Image (cartoon, rainbow, N blue to C red; front, side):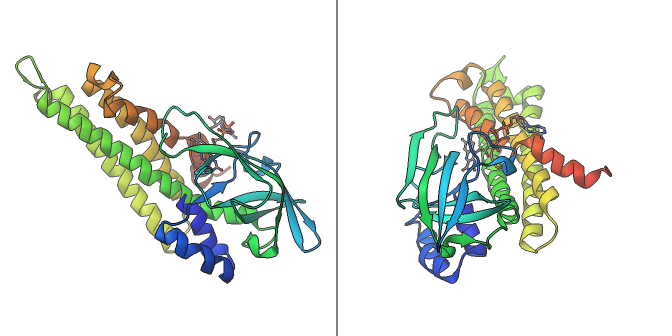
Length: 285
Ligand SMILES: Cc1cc2nc3c(=O)[nH]c(=O)nc-3n(C[C@H](O)[C@H](O)[C@H](O)COP(=O)(O)OP(=O)(O)OC[C@H]3O[C@@H](n4cnc5c(N)ncnc54)[C@H](O)[C@@H]3O)c2cc1C
């Protein structure tokens, strides 16, 4: 995932950046971001993976869950508990003690395979710390903005793909002697797909602009991610309606879009959690 590279770019030592970033940029290496655990998804502060200082080194123990790219990654950026605080480490995937589990069998997004990763007494040094000892939650909060913008872009791609499939079908299939698109309810359904996809793309650009320019952006990123993922799911459903029986075929792109869209409201934090971020910004509580 690009965001592991972003964490190294912003928070890594010069040595780490010099070794890893050119390889990531060339596509020769792949990164993974491992935050979630079997017992800690939305509640990041409930993670149990620890990094214990032992002389000059840190020893990592614990298990991460649903790590996208775990199987193919060359390096892993991970959040650990360090006593009462949290610290982010960048670990080479082939460090002794790192073990990647079986690929998760998921409903959709099967092209980006996730798996669990266990850290069994993995030794890392100070140079592997990103953003300083004890600053893990702040580092991850910053990186989550990028993760969520990333999810926005994927969700927007899904929403537009759904629109394209529905539009093409509505223009070519006929019912009652005319193209489906000539029936107003179908034309409006396809039009709404375009409208919603365009709106959520603009919200993504707005949030990305704020992030890039150092403005307060977490609620705007959350808003863009909620809009993009809700639109991906809504458009995938509308696409199925326009295609009807053709959409249910296992060979149809519509059914893949429908399955892929579901992850968008979960990845990078569920939309419930993101609505809380927006609500905290809007409401005086
Ligand atoms: C295919 C896939 C790929 C993934 N890739 C990665 C990855 O690369 N790296 C990574 O770190 N993680 C990854 N994840 C994990 C993902 O970030 C979590 O699934 C997500 O944060 C939600 O956690 P959870 O599934 O444990 O749900 P839970 O936290 O158990 O939540 C379950 C439900 O309860 C709701 N809920 C929980 N707490 C609250 C609350 N306080 N208020 C209101 N509602 C609440 C949630 O919104 C949700 O509806 C991936 C997940 C999947 C499925």
